[in-house]
Image (cartoon, one colour):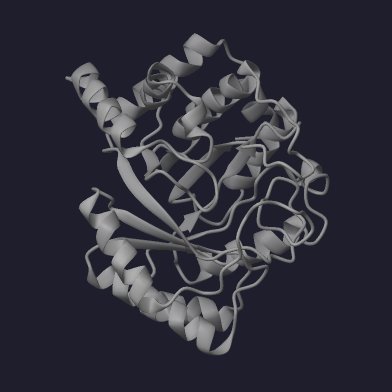
Length: 308
């Protein structure tokens, strides 16, 4: 498929796109996967991502904490398992994964999570080849490394690393056959062409992403994007991206990640109908507020009734 064809698909009438994506979902039925996210090292990140509460460049209300003890991570993993999560995701505010004892502790975290019967996903920024090899040996289920947006728009939201830096790590992960979790953010001021280019970048990876988290911007005060207002058009753009990801990546998990709380239960049901099949559970993501457990229980009940 050519890049122009992706943009042409993006411009199809919305109802036609939803029905096409739903048909693909019926042909490749996948259960809704529930993941739980834990920040294992918060704040102090040397990157200047314009949307992020954890950057050292911005004075936000986020409280920094160093790398968590192994025992705490194990306790949180047990809680996630009890809440019905199939995957436990660990996120650290790094530009590049740490070396030495900190990385050894992270490897132990991966082993502990896997020993509990949970899948384990990790995001630590960029990786070196030896780190990728060690993560593979530790049993890592997937590695998250988001492209966020198109190559053309990228430099408008991040200047401390390049698109090529991100692609380099993604190609390294593919070389070691570690499943890739790679997604994007909607609502930063990007265009439809940027959405199409982002999808084209995913299509151009050595292997299709195992999971694609789609985030609606959660504006954080005192960040460059803190004053943006999320409009209905951004919600519709995310819906279109859900459809396109389901059509272009029929066997990938398409995850509704940050910003899910801004969607009503009915709107979320439409996202599931259009091909979304993965969410983060729990009242908090890394730093952003998420849908509460009670709200989600009600959603699963409604969704189960609608699908039966």
